[in-house]
Image (cartoon, rainbow, N blue to C red; front, side):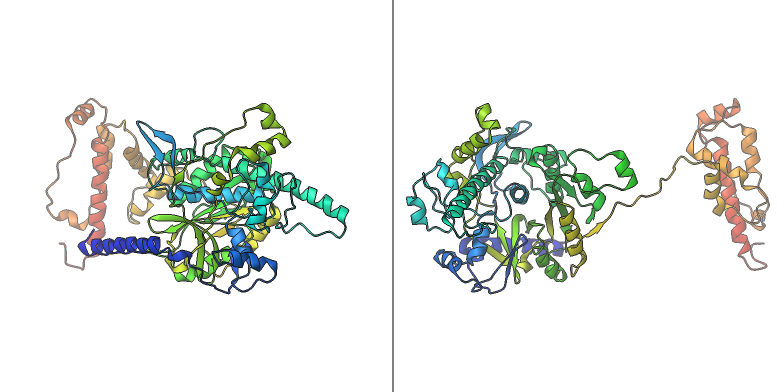
Length: 564
Protein backbone atom coordinates (compact mmCIF):
# COMPACT_ATOMS: atom_id res chain seq x y z
CA UNK A 1 0.00 0.00 0.00
CA UNK A 2 1.35 3.44 -0.93
CA UNK A 3 2.24 6.00 1.73
CA UNK A 4 -0.63 8.40 0.88
CA UNK A 5 -3.11 5.53 1.03
CA UNK A 6 -1.77 4.50 4.44
CA UNK A 7 -2.07 8.08 5.65
CA UNK A 8 -5.68 8.30 4.48
CA UNK A 9 -6.51 4.97 6.13
CA UNK A 10 -4.82 6.04 9.38
CA UNK A 11 -6.66 9.35 9.38
CA UNK A 12 -9.95 7.57 8.74
CA UNK A 13 -9.28 5.17 11.64
CA UNK A 14 -8.46 8.06 13.97
CA UNK A 15 -11.60 9.90 12.90
CA UNK A 16 -13.70 6.80 13.52
CA UNK A 17 -12.11 6.34 16.96
CA UNK A 18 -12.71 9.97 17.93
CA UNK A 19 -16.30 9.74 16.74
CA UNK A 20 -16.86 6.68 18.90
CA UNK A 21 -15.19 8.34 21.89
CA UNK A 22 -17.38 11.44 21.60
CA UNK A 23 -20.52 9.34 21.23
CA UNK A 24 -19.55 7.23 24.23
CA UNK A 25 -18.70 10.16 26.53
CA UNK A 26 -21.59 12.40 25.55
CA UNK A 27 -24.01 9.61 24.60
CA UNK A 28 -25.42 12.03 22.05
CA UNK A 29 -27.41 9.32 20.30
CA UNK A 30 -29.78 9.10 23.28
CA UNK A 31 -30.91 12.73 23.13
CA UNK A 32 -34.57 12.95 22.05
CA UNK A 33 -34.90 15.12 18.96
CA UNK A 34 -38.71 15.54 19.24
CA UNK A 35 -39.05 14.80 15.53
CA UNK A 36 -42.73 14.89 14.48
CA UNK A 37 -42.28 12.46 11.56
CA UNK A 38 -43.80 9.01 11.79
CA UNK A 39 -41.64 6.17 13.11
CA UNK A 40 -41.38 2.72 11.56
CA UNK A 41 -40.14 0.03 13.93
CA UNK A 42 -39.78 -3.44 12.39
CA UNK A 43 -42.83 -2.96 10.21
CA UNK A 44 -44.99 -1.24 12.85
CA UNK A 45 -45.97 2.40 12.39
CA UNK A 46 -45.91 4.77 15.38
CA UNK A 47 -46.73 8.50 15.56
CA UNK A 48 -43.84 10.89 16.00
CA UNK A 49 -43.43 13.50 18.70
CA UNK A 50 -46.69 15.31 19.37
CA UNK A 51 -48.70 12.91 17.23
CA UNK A 52 -50.29 10.99 20.11
CA UNK A 53 -53.32 11.91 22.16
CA UNK A 54 -55.20 10.40 25.10
CA UNK A 55 -53.97 8.38 28.03
CA UNK A 56 -51.13 6.81 26.08
CA UNK A 57 -49.42 10.18 25.79
CA UNK A 58 -49.42 10.56 29.56
CA UNK A 59 -47.33 7.43 29.87
CA UNK A 60 -44.86 8.89 27.40
CA UNK A 61 -44.64 12.17 29.30
CA UNK A 62 -44.01 10.31 32.58
CA UNK A 63 -41.02 8.60 31.02
CA UNK A 64 -37.70 10.31 31.55
CA UNK A 65 -36.71 9.41 28.00
CA UNK A 66 -39.29 11.72 26.43
CA UNK A 67 -40.04 9.56 23.41
CA UNK A 68 -43.52 8.92 21.98
CA UNK A 69 -45.16 6.37 24.25
CA UNK A 70 -46.36 3.88 21.62
CA UNK A 71 -42.93 3.79 20.02
CA UNK A 72 -41.13 3.57 23.35
CA UNK A 73 -43.27 0.66 24.55
CA UNK A 74 -42.48 -1.20 21.34
CA UNK A 75 -38.77 -0.32 21.39
CA UNK A 76 -38.17 -1.54 24.94
CA UNK A 77 -39.92 -4.82 24.14
CA UNK A 78 -37.37 -5.79 21.47
CA UNK A 79 -34.88 -8.46 22.55
CA UNK A 80 -31.39 -7.06 22.98
CA UNK A 81 -28.35 -9.37 23.01
CA UNK A 82 -25.14 -7.82 24.32
CA UNK A 83 -21.62 -8.77 25.32
CA UNK A 84 -21.52 -11.17 28.25
CA UNK A 85 -18.79 -12.21 30.64
CA UNK A 86 -18.10 -14.92 33.20
CA UNK A 87 -19.72 -17.67 31.17
CA UNK A 88 -18.40 -21.18 30.67
CA UNK A 89 -15.37 -20.85 28.38
CA UNK A 90 -15.74 -21.37 24.65
CA UNK A 91 -13.18 -24.08 23.95
CA UNK A 92 -11.09 -23.95 20.80
CA UNK A 93 -8.10 -26.21 21.18
CA UNK A 94 -6.02 -25.14 24.17
CA UNK A 95 -7.62 -21.71 24.41
CA UNK A 96 -10.88 -20.69 26.02
CA UNK A 97 -12.96 -17.52 26.00
CA UNK A 98 -15.18 -16.64 28.96
CA UNK A 99 -16.26 -13.31 27.42
CA UNK A 100 -16.94 -12.10 23.89
CA UNK A 101 -16.25 -8.43 24.65
CA UNK A 102 -14.23 -6.81 21.88
CA UNK A 103 -14.98 -9.27 19.10
CA UNK A 104 -18.52 -10.64 19.44
CA UNK A 105 -20.64 -7.63 18.43
CA UNK A 106 -21.71 -9.11 15.08
CA UNK A 107 -22.52 -12.36 16.85
CA UNK A 108 -24.75 -10.47 19.28
CA UNK A 109 -26.53 -8.40 16.64
CA UNK A 110 -27.11 -11.58 14.66
CA UNK A 111 -28.58 -13.15 17.80
CA UNK A 112 -30.80 -10.09 18.28
CA UNK A 113 -32.14 -10.32 14.74
CA UNK A 114 -32.83 -14.03 15.13
CA UNK A 115 -34.39 -13.61 18.59
CA UNK A 116 -36.84 -10.94 17.45
CA UNK A 117 -37.88 -13.06 14.48
CA UNK A 118 -38.61 -15.95 16.85
CA UNK A 119 -40.38 -13.57 19.23
CA UNK A 120 -42.80 -12.63 16.44
CA UNK A 121 -43.50 -16.31 15.73
CA UNK A 122 -43.92 -17.64 19.26
CA UNK A 123 -45.16 -14.62 21.21
CA UNK A 124 -46.53 -12.17 18.65
CA UNK A 125 -45.47 -8.87 17.14
CA UNK A 126 -47.97 -7.01 19.33
CA UNK A 127 -46.48 -8.29 22.60
CA UNK A 128 -45.26 -5.59 25.00
CA UNK A 129 -43.25 -5.80 28.20
CA UNK A 130 -44.71 -4.61 31.49
CA UNK A 131 -43.39 -1.31 32.90
CA UNK A 132 -39.90 -1.20 34.37
CA UNK A 133 -41.03 -1.40 38.01
CA UNK A 134 -41.71 -5.11 38.34
CA UNK A 135 -43.08 -7.23 41.19
CA UNK A 136 -40.81 -9.15 43.50
CA UNK A 137 -38.36 -11.54 41.75
CA UNK A 138 -39.33 -15.17 41.12
CA UNK A 139 -43.03 -14.38 41.52
CA UNK A 140 -45.61 -15.64 39.05
CA UNK A 141 -47.27 -12.22 39.20
CA UNK A 142 -44.43 -10.96 37.00
CA UNK A 143 -46.59 -11.98 34.09
CA UNK A 144 -49.79 -10.33 35.29
CA UNK A 145 -49.45 -6.55 35.83
CA UNK A 146 -51.23 -4.18 33.51
CA UNK A 147 -48.73 -2.33 31.30
CA UNK A 148 -50.79 0.84 31.67
CA UNK A 149 -50.52 0.80 35.46
CA UNK A 150 -48.11 3.14 37.17
CA UNK A 151 -44.98 1.62 38.80
CA UNK A 152 -46.34 2.41 42.27
CA UNK A 153 -49.67 0.67 41.75
CA UNK A 154 -48.01 -2.28 40.07
CA UNK A 155 -45.77 -2.86 43.06
CA UNK A 156 -48.66 -2.71 45.55
CA UNK A 157 -50.98 -5.04 43.64
CA UNK A 158 -51.79 -8.26 45.47
CA UNK A 159 -50.51 -11.37 43.73
CA UNK A 160 -53.84 -13.14 44.18
CA UNK A 161 -55.75 -10.47 42.26
CA UNK A 162 -54.47 -10.39 38.68
CA UNK A 163 -55.50 -7.50 36.49
CA UNK A 164 -56.18 -7.71 32.76
CA UNK A 165 -53.56 -6.96 30.14
CA UNK A 166 -54.76 -4.04 28.02
CA UNK A 167 -51.88 -3.19 25.72
CA UNK A 168 -52.42 -5.95 23.19
CA UNK A 169 -54.34 -4.41 20.24
CA UNK A 170 -56.52 -7.50 19.83
CA UNK A 171 -58.18 -7.04 23.25
CA UNK A 172 -61.43 -5.03 23.18
CA UNK A 173 -63.52 -3.59 26.06
CA UNK A 174 -66.81 -5.28 27.03
CA UNK A 175 -70.10 -3.78 28.17
CA UNK A 176 -71.26 -6.14 30.94
CA UNK A 177 -69.63 -7.23 34.17
CA UNK A 178 -69.88 -10.94 33.33
CA UNK A 179 -68.31 -10.53 29.94
CA UNK A 180 -65.64 -8.32 31.46
CA UNK A 181 -64.72 -10.97 34.03
CA UNK A 182 -64.65 -13.66 31.37
CA UNK A 183 -62.52 -11.51 29.10
CA UNK A 184 -60.14 -10.70 31.94
CA UNK A 185 -59.65 -14.37 32.72
CA UNK A 186 -58.98 -15.19 29.07
CA UNK A 187 -56.61 -12.27 28.77
CA UNK A 188 -54.69 -13.32 31.86
CA UNK A 189 -54.43 -16.88 30.61
CA UNK A 190 -53.16 -15.68 27.26
CA UNK A 191 -50.76 -13.32 28.97
CA UNK A 192 -49.25 -16.10 31.10
CA UNK A 193 -48.91 -18.33 28.05
CA UNK A 194 -47.17 -15.63 26.03
CA UNK A 195 -44.85 -14.70 28.86
CA UNK A 196 -43.88 -18.31 29.41
CA UNK A 197 -43.10 -18.62 25.70
CA UNK A 198 -41.09 -15.40 25.90
CA UNK A 199 -38.96 -16.58 28.83
CA UNK A 200 -38.41 -19.98 27.23
CA UNK A 201 -37.30 -18.25 24.04
CA UNK A 202 -34.73 -16.20 25.96
CA UNK A 203 -33.23 -19.39 27.40
CA UNK A 204 -32.35 -20.47 23.85
CA UNK A 205 -29.85 -17.57 23.75
CA UNK A 206 -28.22 -17.99 27.16
CA UNK A 207 -24.44 -18.24 27.19
CA UNK A 208 -23.78 -21.93 27.70
CA UNK A 209 -22.83 -24.91 25.53
CA UNK A 210 -25.74 -26.85 27.06
CA UNK A 211 -28.34 -28.21 24.62
CA UNK A 212 -30.99 -26.02 26.29
CA UNK A 213 -29.36 -23.01 24.56
CA UNK A 214 -29.20 -23.90 20.84
CA UNK A 215 -28.42 -20.28 19.82
CA UNK A 216 -25.81 -19.48 22.48
CA UNK A 217 -22.66 -17.55 21.72
CA UNK A 218 -20.79 -20.84 22.06
CA UNK A 219 -22.72 -22.46 19.24
CA UNK A 220 -22.70 -19.33 17.09
CA UNK A 221 -18.93 -18.93 17.09
CA UNK A 222 -18.27 -22.65 16.59
CA UNK A 223 -20.67 -22.61 13.63
CA UNK A 224 -18.71 -19.61 12.35
CA UNK A 225 -15.49 -21.53 12.73
CA UNK A 226 -16.86 -24.25 10.47
CA UNK A 227 -17.47 -21.49 7.93
CA UNK A 228 -13.89 -20.22 8.13
CA UNK A 229 -13.88 -17.64 10.95
CA UNK A 230 -11.78 -18.45 14.00
CA UNK A 231 -13.14 -18.15 17.51
CA UNK A 232 -12.29 -14.75 18.96
CA UNK A 233 -12.38 -12.92 15.64
CA UNK A 234 -15.01 -10.58 14.23
CA UNK A 235 -17.85 -12.04 12.19
CA UNK A 236 -18.86 -10.61 8.84
CA UNK A 237 -22.50 -10.46 7.72
CA UNK A 238 -22.18 -13.52 5.48
CA UNK A 239 -20.64 -15.63 8.25
CA UNK A 240 -23.35 -14.51 10.65
CA UNK A 241 -26.03 -15.51 8.14
CA UNK A 242 -24.42 -18.90 7.59
CA UNK A 243 -24.10 -19.55 11.33
CA UNK A 244 -27.76 -18.65 11.92
CA UNK A 245 -28.89 -20.97 9.16
CA UNK A 246 -26.75 -23.82 10.49
CA UNK A 247 -28.09 -23.52 14.04
CA UNK A 248 -31.73 -23.11 13.01
CA UNK A 249 -31.54 -26.20 10.83
CA UNK A 250 -30.09 -28.13 13.77
CA UNK A 251 -32.96 -27.07 16.05
CA UNK A 252 -36.31 -27.71 14.30
CA UNK A 253 -38.16 -27.07 17.56
CA UNK A 254 -37.78 -23.35 16.89
CA UNK A 255 -40.44 -23.77 14.19
CA UNK A 256 -38.72 -21.75 11.49
CA UNK A 257 -36.67 -22.21 8.34
CA UNK A 258 -33.91 -19.98 6.96
CA UNK A 259 -33.17 -18.95 3.39
CA UNK A 260 -29.97 -17.02 2.64
CA UNK A 261 -29.76 -14.92 -0.51
CA UNK A 262 -27.13 -15.83 -3.09
CA UNK A 263 -25.34 -12.78 -4.52
CA UNK A 264 -28.19 -10.50 -3.51
CA UNK A 265 -30.90 -12.70 -5.03
CA UNK A 266 -33.66 -14.54 -3.17
CA UNK A 267 -35.09 -17.52 -5.03
CA UNK A 268 -38.70 -18.50 -4.43
CA UNK A 269 -37.96 -22.19 -4.88
CA UNK A 270 -35.32 -22.03 -2.14
CA UNK A 271 -37.65 -20.10 0.17
CA UNK A 272 -40.42 -22.64 -0.36
CA UNK A 273 -38.02 -25.49 0.41
CA UNK A 274 -37.05 -23.79 3.68
CA UNK A 275 -40.73 -23.52 4.64
CA UNK A 276 -41.07 -27.32 4.82
CA UNK A 277 -40.17 -29.06 8.06
CA UNK A 278 -39.70 -32.28 6.11
CA UNK A 279 -37.85 -32.17 2.78
CA UNK A 280 -40.28 -31.84 -0.14
CA UNK A 281 -40.73 -34.79 -2.46
CA UNK A 282 -38.46 -35.05 -5.48
CA UNK A 283 -41.45 -35.04 -7.83
CA UNK A 284 -42.58 -31.64 -6.55
CA UNK A 285 -39.07 -30.24 -6.85
CA UNK A 286 -38.61 -31.54 -10.38
CA UNK A 287 -42.00 -30.41 -11.66
CA UNK A 288 -41.71 -26.97 -10.07
CA UNK A 289 -45.02 -27.42 -8.23
CA UNK A 290 -43.47 -26.73 -4.82
CA UNK A 291 -45.66 -24.51 -2.63
CA UNK A 292 -45.38 -22.95 0.83
CA UNK A 293 -44.88 -25.47 3.61
CA UNK A 294 -45.81 -25.61 7.28
CA UNK A 295 -43.51 -23.06 8.93
CA UNK A 296 -42.28 -19.45 8.64
CA UNK A 297 -39.02 -18.60 6.89
CA UNK A 298 -36.37 -16.10 7.94
CA UNK A 299 -34.86 -14.39 4.88
CA UNK A 300 -31.26 -13.21 5.27
CA UNK A 301 -29.43 -10.98 2.80
CA UNK A 302 -25.81 -9.92 3.13
CA UNK A 303 -25.48 -6.60 1.31
CA UNK A 304 -22.79 -4.04 0.61
CA UNK A 305 -24.18 -0.72 -0.59
CA UNK A 306 -21.03 1.32 -1.13
CA UNK A 307 -17.32 1.55 -0.40
CA UNK A 308 -16.63 3.73 2.65
CA UNK A 309 -20.29 4.51 3.31
CA UNK A 310 -23.76 3.75 2.04
CA UNK A 311 -24.37 5.45 -1.29
CA UNK A 312 -26.98 8.18 -0.66
CA UNK A 313 -29.10 6.89 -3.53
CA UNK A 314 -29.99 3.92 -1.30
CA UNK A 315 -31.10 5.93 1.75
CA UNK A 316 -34.78 6.04 0.78
CA UNK A 317 -34.74 2.32 0.04
CA UNK A 318 -33.26 1.45 3.43
CA UNK A 319 -35.87 3.57 5.21
CA UNK A 320 -38.64 1.93 3.21
CA UNK A 321 -37.45 -1.55 4.24
CA UNK A 322 -38.62 -0.79 7.79
CA UNK A 323 -42.15 -0.24 6.49
CA UNK A 324 -42.30 -3.89 5.41
CA UNK A 325 -44.41 -5.87 7.90
CA UNK A 326 -41.90 -8.67 7.33
CA UNK A 327 -38.94 -6.59 8.56
CA UNK A 328 -36.82 -7.92 11.43
CA UNK A 329 -34.11 -5.28 11.14
CA UNK A 330 -30.53 -4.87 10.02
CA UNK A 331 -27.41 -6.18 11.77
CA UNK A 332 -24.05 -4.53 11.16
CA UNK A 333 -23.78 -1.13 9.68
CA UNK A 334 -21.06 0.68 11.68
CA UNK A 335 -17.33 0.76 10.85
CA UNK A 336 -15.38 -1.73 12.98
CA UNK A 337 -18.49 -2.50 15.02
CA UNK A 338 -21.99 -3.81 14.64
CA UNK A 339 -25.35 -2.45 15.80
CA UNK A 340 -28.84 -3.85 15.51
CA UNK A 341 -30.94 -1.29 13.63
CA UNK A 342 -34.63 -1.69 14.41
CA UNK A 343 -36.36 1.42 13.09
CA UNK A 344 -36.26 4.57 10.99
CA UNK A 345 -37.55 8.12 11.32
CA UNK A 346 -36.81 10.95 8.89
CA UNK A 347 -33.04 10.71 8.22
CA UNK A 348 -32.20 8.70 11.34
CA UNK A 349 -32.07 5.07 12.42
CA UNK A 350 -32.91 3.63 15.84
CA UNK A 351 -30.55 0.94 17.06
CA UNK A 352 -29.59 -1.39 19.90
CA UNK A 353 -25.91 -1.29 20.86
CA UNK A 354 -24.41 -4.66 21.88
CA UNK A 355 -21.22 -3.10 23.28
CA UNK A 356 -22.32 -3.34 26.91
CA UNK A 357 -20.83 -6.23 28.87
CA UNK A 358 -23.02 -7.93 31.47
CA UNK A 359 -22.66 -11.05 33.60
CA UNK A 360 -23.99 -14.15 31.90
CA UNK A 361 -27.36 -15.46 33.03
CA UNK A 362 -27.08 -19.15 34.00
CA UNK A 363 -29.42 -21.61 32.37
CA UNK A 364 -31.91 -23.30 34.69
CA UNK A 365 -33.64 -26.10 32.78
CA UNK A 366 -36.75 -27.81 34.16
CA UNK A 367 -35.63 -30.45 36.63
CA UNK A 368 -38.55 -32.83 36.37
CA UNK A 369 -40.38 -34.57 33.56
CA UNK A 370 -43.61 -33.00 34.78
CA UNK A 371 -42.21 -29.51 34.32
CA UNK A 372 -41.01 -30.41 30.85
CA UNK A 373 -44.23 -31.98 29.57
CA UNK A 374 -47.21 -30.31 31.27
CA UNK A 375 -48.23 -26.91 29.92
CA UNK A 376 -49.46 -25.48 33.22
CA UNK A 377 -46.39 -26.69 35.08
CA UNK A 378 -44.15 -25.33 32.32
CA UNK A 379 -45.74 -21.89 32.56
CA UNK A 380 -45.36 -21.94 36.33
CA UNK A 381 -41.73 -23.01 36.01
CA UNK A 382 -40.76 -20.26 33.56
CA UNK A 383 -42.66 -17.76 35.70
CA UNK A 384 -40.28 -18.37 38.59
CA UNK A 385 -37.04 -19.71 37.08
CA UNK A 386 -35.53 -16.31 36.23
CA UNK A 387 -35.70 -13.05 38.12
CA UNK A 388 -37.10 -9.88 36.65
CA UNK A 389 -33.63 -8.33 36.93
CA UNK A 390 -32.13 -11.13 34.84
CA UNK A 391 -34.78 -10.79 32.16
CA UNK A 392 -34.33 -7.03 32.18
CA UNK A 393 -30.78 -7.44 30.84
CA UNK A 394 -32.25 -8.60 27.52
CA UNK A 395 -34.03 -5.29 26.92
CA UNK A 396 -32.87 -1.71 26.50
CA UNK A 397 -34.58 1.20 28.26
CA UNK A 398 -32.49 3.87 26.55
CA UNK A 399 -33.40 4.80 22.97
CA UNK A 400 -30.52 5.53 20.62
CA UNK A 401 -30.75 7.16 17.22
CA UNK A 402 -28.02 7.94 14.70
CA UNK A 403 -27.92 9.66 11.29
CA UNK A 404 -28.48 7.43 8.30
CA UNK A 405 -25.37 8.96 6.72
CA UNK A 406 -23.21 7.26 9.37
CA UNK A 407 -24.24 3.76 8.32
CA UNK A 408 -21.53 1.35 7.18
CA UNK A 409 -22.23 -0.21 3.75
CA UNK A 410 -21.76 -3.82 4.91
CA UNK A 411 -24.88 -5.21 6.58
CA UNK A 412 -27.12 -8.22 7.16
CA UNK A 413 -30.79 -7.53 6.36
CA UNK A 414 -33.54 -9.80 7.69
CA UNK A 415 -37.20 -10.42 6.86
CA UNK A 416 -39.70 -12.92 8.24
CA UNK A 417 -42.43 -14.43 6.06
CA UNK A 418 -44.90 -16.58 8.00
CA UNK A 419 -46.98 -17.88 5.10
CA UNK A 420 -47.47 -17.70 1.34
CA UNK A 421 -49.58 -14.56 1.60
CA UNK A 422 -46.83 -12.67 3.41
CA UNK A 423 -44.29 -13.95 0.89
CA UNK A 424 -46.31 -12.65 -2.06
CA UNK A 425 -46.79 -9.32 -0.28
CA UNK A 426 -43.04 -9.18 0.32
CA UNK A 427 -42.30 -9.76 -3.38
CA UNK A 428 -44.70 -6.98 -4.33
CA UNK A 429 -43.06 -4.54 -1.92
CA UNK A 430 -39.57 -5.39 -3.18
CA UNK A 431 -40.64 -4.64 -6.75
CA UNK A 432 -41.86 -1.20 -5.63
CA UNK A 433 -38.62 -0.12 -3.93
CA UNK A 434 -37.23 3.18 -5.27
CA UNK A 435 -33.80 1.58 -5.78
CA UNK A 436 -33.18 -2.14 -6.01
CA UNK A 437 -30.70 -3.37 -3.39
CA UNK A 438 -31.61 -7.02 -3.95
CA UNK A 439 -33.96 -8.99 -6.18
CA UNK A 440 -36.37 -11.91 -6.00
CA UNK A 441 -36.57 -14.58 -8.70
CA UNK A 442 -38.58 -17.76 -9.08
CA UNK A 443 -35.67 -20.19 -9.20
CA UNK A 444 -31.90 -20.29 -9.74
CA UNK A 445 -30.72 -20.34 -13.36
CA UNK A 446 -30.01 -23.78 -14.78
CA UNK A 447 -26.76 -23.66 -16.72
CA UNK A 448 -26.12 -26.30 -19.42
CA UNK A 449 -23.57 -28.90 -18.46
CA UNK A 450 -20.16 -28.62 -20.10
CA UNK A 451 -18.25 -31.76 -21.08
CA UNK A 452 -14.55 -31.13 -20.53
CA UNK A 453 -13.56 -34.66 -21.48
CA UNK A 454 -13.17 -33.82 -25.17
CA UNK A 455 -13.78 -35.87 -28.29
CA UNK A 456 -12.53 -35.86 -31.84
CA UNK A 457 -15.08 -33.36 -33.13
CA UNK A 458 -14.35 -30.88 -30.31
CA UNK A 459 -10.62 -31.29 -30.85
CA UNK A 460 -11.00 -30.61 -34.56
CA UNK A 461 -13.00 -27.48 -33.85
CA UNK A 462 -10.38 -26.35 -31.37
CA UNK A 463 -7.66 -26.36 -34.03
CA UNK A 464 -9.84 -25.13 -36.89
CA UNK A 465 -8.54 -21.60 -36.47
CA UNK A 466 -4.98 -22.86 -36.91
CA UNK A 467 -5.65 -24.46 -40.29
CA UNK A 468 -4.79 -22.47 -43.42
CA UNK A 469 -7.20 -22.36 -46.33
CA UNK A 470 -4.25 -23.21 -48.56
CA UNK A 471 -3.07 -26.10 -46.41
CA UNK A 472 -3.49 -29.25 -48.53
CA UNK A 473 -3.60 -31.58 -45.55
CA UNK A 474 -6.99 -32.58 -44.20
CA UNK A 475 -7.98 -31.51 -40.70
CA UNK A 476 -8.37 -35.11 -39.65
CA UNK A 477 -4.76 -35.05 -38.48
CA UNK A 478 -5.59 -32.43 -35.85
CA UNK A 479 -7.11 -34.72 -33.20
CA UNK A 480 -3.93 -36.74 -32.89
CA UNK A 481 -1.95 -33.57 -32.28
CA UNK A 482 -4.35 -32.39 -29.58
CA UNK A 483 -4.38 -35.80 -27.95
CA UNK A 484 -0.60 -35.68 -27.74
CA UNK A 485 -0.82 -32.70 -25.46
CA UNK A 486 -3.41 -34.33 -23.19
CA UNK A 487 -2.22 -37.92 -22.81
CA UNK A 488 0.94 -40.05 -23.21
CA UNK A 489 1.69 -41.09 -26.73
CA UNK A 490 2.62 -44.44 -28.22
CA UNK A 491 4.08 -43.40 -31.53
CA UNK A 492 7.11 -44.31 -33.63
CA UNK A 493 9.82 -42.26 -35.23
CA UNK A 494 8.31 -43.03 -38.61
CA UNK A 495 4.95 -41.54 -37.61
CA UNK A 496 6.64 -38.42 -36.33
CA UNK A 497 8.61 -38.11 -39.56
CA UNK A 498 5.41 -37.91 -41.57
CA UNK A 499 4.39 -34.86 -39.53
CA UNK A 500 7.69 -33.14 -40.33
CA UNK A 501 6.96 -32.88 -44.05
CA UNK A 502 6.20 -29.21 -44.74
CA UNK A 503 5.16 -27.40 -47.91
CA UNK A 504 7.68 -24.99 -49.32
CA UNK A 505 7.04 -21.32 -48.68
CA UNK A 506 8.77 -18.25 -50.09
CA UNK A 507 10.63 -17.81 -46.80
CA UNK A 508 11.98 -21.33 -46.94
CA UNK A 509 14.74 -20.11 -49.31
CA UNK A 510 16.25 -18.08 -46.49
CA UNK A 511 18.86 -19.96 -44.59
CA UNK A 512 17.48 -20.49 -41.11
CA UNK A 513 19.68 -22.46 -38.75
CA UNK A 514 17.81 -25.51 -37.56
CA UNK A 515 16.97 -25.74 -33.88
CA UNK A 516 17.97 -28.94 -32.13
CA UNK A 517 15.20 -31.18 -31.01
CA UNK A 518 14.72 -30.84 -27.24
CA UNK A 519 14.36 -34.50 -26.40
CA UNK A 520 15.65 -35.97 -23.17
CA UNK A 521 17.78 -39.08 -23.10
CA UNK A 522 14.94 -41.31 -21.95
CA UNK A 523 12.82 -40.20 -24.86
CA UNK A 524 15.69 -40.88 -27.28
CA UNK A 525 16.22 -44.38 -25.98
CA UNK A 526 12.54 -45.19 -26.14
CA UNK A 527 12.34 -43.80 -29.68
CA UNK A 528 15.18 -45.94 -30.96
CA UNK A 529 13.48 -48.95 -29.44
CA UNK A 530 10.30 -48.16 -31.30
CA UNK A 531 8.48 -46.65 -28.28
CA UNK A 532 8.00 -42.88 -28.33
CA UNK A 533 8.32 -40.68 -25.22
CA UNK A 534 5.70 -38.41 -23.69
CA UNK A 535 6.43 -35.53 -26.08
CA UNK A 536 8.98 -37.22 -28.28
CA UNK A 537 9.38 -36.26 -31.92
CA UNK A 538 5.64 -36.03 -32.44
CA UNK A 539 5.22 -32.91 -30.36
CA UNK A 540 8.35 -31.38 -31.84
CA UNK A 541 6.98 -32.06 -35.29
CA UNK A 542 3.73 -30.38 -34.39
CA UNK A 543 5.66 -27.31 -33.23
CA UNK A 544 7.57 -27.23 -36.51
CA UNK A 545 4.30 -27.33 -38.42
CA UNK A 546 3.07 -24.30 -36.54
CA UNK A 547 6.34 -22.44 -37.19
CA UNK A 548 6.17 -23.21 -40.89
CA UNK A 549 2.56 -22.13 -41.04
CA UNK A 550 3.50 -18.82 -39.40
CA UNK A 551 6.28 -18.24 -41.92
CA UNK A 552 3.98 -18.97 -44.84
CA UNK A 553 1.30 -16.60 -43.51
CA UNK A 554 3.90 -13.85 -43.06
CA UNK A 555 5.20 -14.25 -46.59
CA UNK A 556 1.72 -13.69 -48.03
CA UNK A 557 1.65 -10.23 -46.47
CA UNK A 558 5.04 -9.14 -47.98
CA UNK A 559 5.07 -6.88 -51.13
CA UNK A 560 6.44 -8.24 -54.35
CA UNK A 561 10.19 -8.38 -54.39
CA UNK A 562 10.57 -8.64 -50.62
CA UNK A 563 11.60 -11.77 -48.90
CA UNK A 564 13.44 -13.07 -51.96
